[in-house]
Image (cartoon, rainbow over the protein chains, first blue to last red):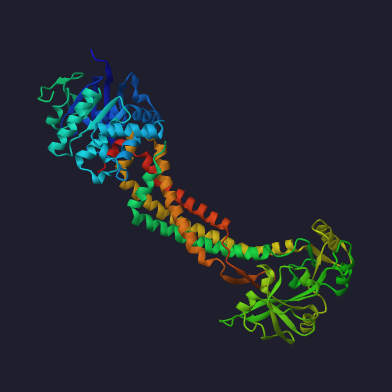
Length: 237
Length: 387
């Protein structure tokens, strides 16, 4: 049986808008195994991005525990959580979120600036990450000089350059044409299978979800089947 | 490690129009600050740098300056006999009895009258002030009504060029030479022989006595001796101290410089703040991304403050460059101790430039602090939603 990497226990999240409390997640309990490629699906406002943010340590639960590699990240203070994210999480965003004034190399290098690696080692890591995504020829290109698909590949290189424990992707193909989307999903699948990366992906797109090992559905902040993981039959698996 | 500096520099270039506008605002403030402070600087330096370290000046007790003072001829004789007074190679005491009189002269161009000091000096007066050098014409001769004029005064007042005649007191004075006093207070004076001045202005007594001590160490002792001599009823101090005490004339200008600088600086801070708020709004998603990647709140805050300081420092440098033409411009004001014209030049010194750059950096820090704090404190999830 695969080792549990992420453990969510009775996680709730609500936001306050003026005096009104808006519930987003309701007692979500879930285990995610190391090496998993999990897709989170659900309608808009179902809480899937919030769930992803909690796992990635960029948001905190209102109650419950979020344990990653046996560490309750909800208990970490702001500084510790930032350090934890830098070490353990690779982010892939829908709009790529590259820094426009930095070129591909510099964008990928950003997370490494938070490590103690030497300049040469950083360079080696960046070049490795860019070669994994097939963009080693585009190191000096700025985001505006790249296509959407290429930008997302640079973003993926940035996400994997520190060799994080898990990759979180929020609608990674949401802004791409079908061909580029497939290339990105193929790349993510490769990262999962060849490099054994645990990936949690939020998506609206059943086609994208088809690349994942398993799919979880969220509806109004509640998992369709608490603690469970649905196996989705797909041509891509 | 902090967010790389190239991130800030390239962003400044990307938003170059806004950056340039802010740079220009800071530059103007810095230029005005430097201009006013260089005015105060020039005035102070004209007075501070006046005087030889071994010289002692004696004036009447409680007099604020030579102009209000009176020293009898007997007192001058007594001073020359005091121990500790230096002597020339011929054995004569190095002491100069002097008369300083305020005269009214029309300015060049406007014709507006202003007070200028005419100083009657003894022969030793020149030896006591080695900085004073004839730069055109010749040295005055006693008894002939000849005068020499500082070049700065000749530039600013009518009928004071070589060969011209000015009517002062009861006689006409022929200008026979121009002198340069090395930027000291004597650059604001007209000099003649002490006896000629006494005759022309009906002065029985002198205004002051300037005397050289045997050495710097003996100077204070000589000053105390003159002050303590009951027969004289004089107050004596080192010449350098006497002129330093007059630097208070620069005080109001300095205060004005700081006041105007601070008021304009606050305005520039708001300009910088506006620019930085716009920068934060424009880069909200980038800030969220950097935070998500693991950059701390402190590094975001520092990065944006540094960006603001960079803008301000560029503005500071431009301001310094803009102010360079002021350097050396000659002007004058009234010394309220002597009620006479002090000629001096705007003086931009390295210290002033450093102060101006520090002032610019402070504007940058204050202008950038609040927007940077906002950038650092935005919730990551909210910033990532920004389009």
